[in-house]
Length: 315
Image 1: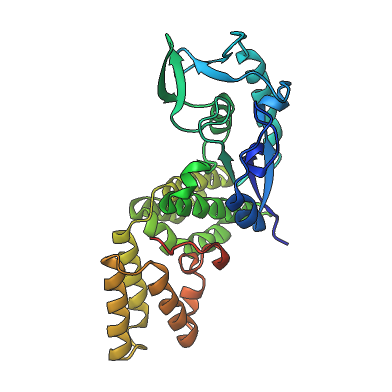
Image 2: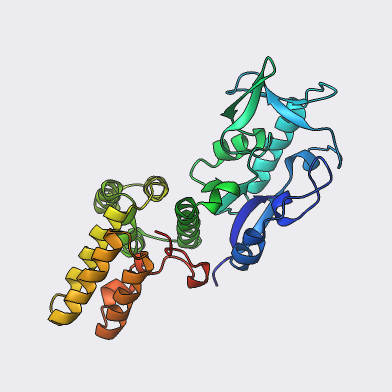
C-alpha cells in the first residue's frame, strides 16, 4: 500500500491562528485542492519555539548570510531561541519522510526567498527565514516553495512534479531494491526527465549503465541527487515538443496519414502556445490505449500526477 504523500507546511496557511497578531493566512488552494492528495505536516516555528499568540512582531537584522531575529519594539534578540528549536525540529522532520515543504512568504522564520533583512534601518530583500534555512540545509534535495509563488502556473507545475517524483523515489526505497529495479524505475522516468533536462537524463543513464558494480547505497544516493536536480529544472515548450515528437515516433507504423497530420498540427499549436500541453497529451494517451503501446503505458511523462490537479493546462 502506498504511503501518504507527506508535505511540510507553515501552520498559518492551514488556517491555524498562530500569527503574531492572532490571525492566520488560510490558503484554500492548499487545503481544498492539494489537501486531497497530501498529508500536511504543519509547523509554526514561533509558537513551537515557545513564543505566545499574539506576540510582538519580529524581523531579521544584520548580515543576510547570518541574520539575527529581533523583536521590533523591545529589541529582544530571539535568534538563539529560534535556532535551538530549528535544530530539534529538523531532526524530528527526518522521521516524517517529507516529499516537499510549503513555506509562508516573507516570514522571518519561514520565508524561503527575498525575506527582508534590516541593516541600519534599511530593508533589503536578500534573506531567508531561520527555519526555512535550517530545513533546506538539512534536506537539500527536498522540493520547497512559498505559497505566494504557487500562484504562478509554471512554478506550481514544477514544484508539484518534484513532490510526486520524490514520493515515487521514497516508495521505491521503501523495500529492498537491486540494480534491476533501478533500471525499471529509470526507464519509466525517461521521457519525464527528457522534458526537464536531457543532459541530466544522459548522466542518469550513464550512472545506471555502469552502476551494477557500485555499492548500492552510494549508487542510489547519487541517482536521487541527479533525479531531483533534473526535476528542479523547468520543462520548457521546446523540450516538451521534442518529447512529443519522440513519442510520435513510436506510432509511425500504426497512425494513418490523417492521424499523423492531426497529431503534428496539435503539436504545432502547442509549440505556438495556441493550446496547452494537456491537448497533445490527451491525444497521445488515446493512441497509447488504442494501439496497446506497452512501453509508453509505463512512461510517467504521460500522467505524472493526478488529473484532478488540472496541471499542464497553462504550459
